[in-house]
Image (cartoon, rainbow, N blue to C red; front, side, top):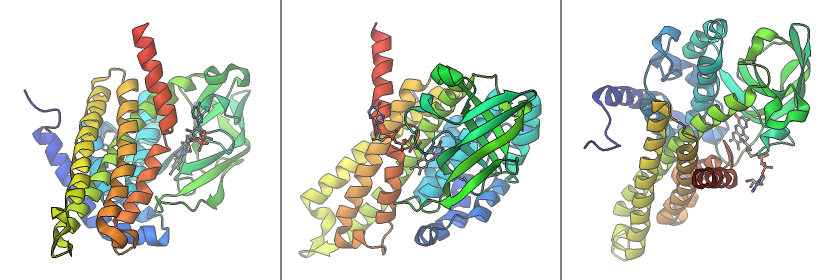
Length: 385
Ligand SMILES: Cc1cc2nc3c(=O)[nH]c(=O)nc-3n(C[C@H](O)[C@H](O)[C@H](O)COP(=O)(O)OP(=O)(O)OC[C@H]3O[C@@H](n4cnc5c(N)ncnc54)[C@H](O)[C@@H]3O)c2cc1C
């Protein structure tokens, strides 16, 4: 029986290609971007030349046509170099290109997907608002029908790519009294009258090469053609997009933990105290062993989530499990990586402090850890009754 972790030759070749690009384009600049709080727009758009902005999109739309296992393995490799860049590519691909591919009408797919794949257009996904995060049903942004147009009013906050994106997948209420069943999703282009980024870029603990900002809608007027799927159909689009993104975030968290582990092992073998490498001390071995155990478990969960998504089956449960486990694991492993580096791990001389600051983001996005636990419990309760 083949292992869940074994990649086919095609998958391996695609990941190998990505690793080469990551080594050349991302690794050398990752620390500097973090240091300068710099969003590397040109580098990100340039990834399109290597097919890395459209790994799972079909070739007919300019994509590489790879499966989900390959795509998430590429994100994992990217996160080893820069969690920020992996998350930016993830937002663009998983949360913008894929819902347009899945739910868009032919004319929407034709209009946007090739441009997203080529990097001409950068995508952002906007649900969170200043007063609404976990409780998506409570979003206050409205879209009121006016003839063949919708008029949007409201604000979005903590949106990745907010200031640099050209295309926004936006959730708004078309039936404010109907909770989740009153949400619609729109595809909105930069330059739409009444719509603009708030202009503020948030300063963050980690993920400092991401562009985290807000959006403002003041009587923003969009055509009916901008509606993705049907009116009040947003719940399904958001649900499927968030499930896919949980699997993606699990892979990104896995990548950052693997990077922290690699640096920790190298440091523990080289650093000597009391006349021997610290890797020979029992307590350091214990940290290294626990890292290996939890990374191995997260790898299996992330791969299983990718496999279920690829099969087209319902991945709600496994994506939440993988995301919850991998994100909490990544925070723990990156924290222990600092411990293994001692006081030096707390300095910017080593990358582990950046990994630690970056890893924490994965516990917060796509539904916090608390929300994942609620979702997993709901799935179990549903199954047993
Ligand atoms: C780096 C980064 C990138 C992001 N990118 C995007 C993006 O591209 N698009 C986007 O739309 N959003 C994005 N977000 C926002 C993110 O999705 C939200 O921060 C997240 O959903 C949590 O919402 P909140 O911050 O408002 O927290 P709140 O919902 O206010 O939660 C606060 C605390 O209460 C807990 N809590 C809330 N409800 C419950 C409950 N029912 N039971 C138990 N505990 C509960 C939460 O777990 C949390 O601990 C991003 C955030 C970050 C940090």
